[in-house]
Length: 142
Length: 136
Image: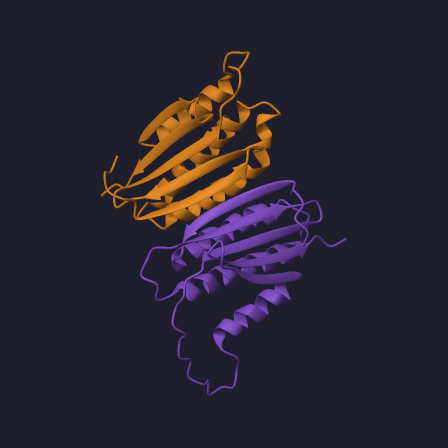
C-alpha cells in the first residue's frame, strides 16, 4: 500500500486487555459509519478490528507487563486503512494440543476471518521499531 | 486528583473537525461503561465530552482545523479523568461567546465534578481537564 497522506487520521491507544477491545470496536464504528460504506461493510470492519485486537492481546498473553495496542485509522475518499500495532514481545511458543475436531486452531481462524472481511491484509514485524503491525484496507464499493 | 498511577489509560486522537466528535463520544461512552458508573453518569460523561470537543473545535480557524484533538482518559478506583487537548487558537475570538457556547460550557460544568481549563502557549495547546467521581 503506497504511503500517501490520508484525508483524515484517527488514532486510538488502548490497554492490551480484552475488556478494551469494545472501545476499539466502537471507535471504528464511529469512523467507518461516516464513510460511504454500507451497513454490512461497517459491520465487517468492526468485526475485523475486534479480531485484530484480540489477536494482538493473545500474542501478548503471558507477558506480565502492561502493554498497549495502537490503532491508526487512515481515511481516504475511496478506502479506509486500519493499522493495529502491538509491541513485539519474544515469548516462548505455546504448546497447542491437536484439535480433535480437525478445525484450524483459533488464532488461524481469526486470521482467516480478517482476510475474508477486509480487502487487503498485510502483517509485518518491525524489529527496529519493536512492533508487530497488522494493516488492513477496506475499499468503498464503487 | 488521585496521586496514584491510573489503573488504565486510553488515548484518542481525532481530526479537529465537527464530524469526528461522534467518534470521541462513542469511545468515551464505552470507556466510562467499563467503570462503576451508572447509566446516567455514563451519559453525562458522553455529553460533556461531546460539548467540550465541540467547543474546542468552534474556537479554531480553518488552518487550525487541519490539526488534531487529543483525548486522554485515565481511570482510577474512584474517578475518571479526561484531558482534552486542542490547538491553541492564534487569536482570541473576534466576538463575544454566543449563547450556545455559554450553554456548552455550563453543561460541562454541571455534568462533570471538576473542570479546569488552561492555555499552554509553550506547547501550543489548550487543555481542558474534566473529572467525574465514582459515587459510592
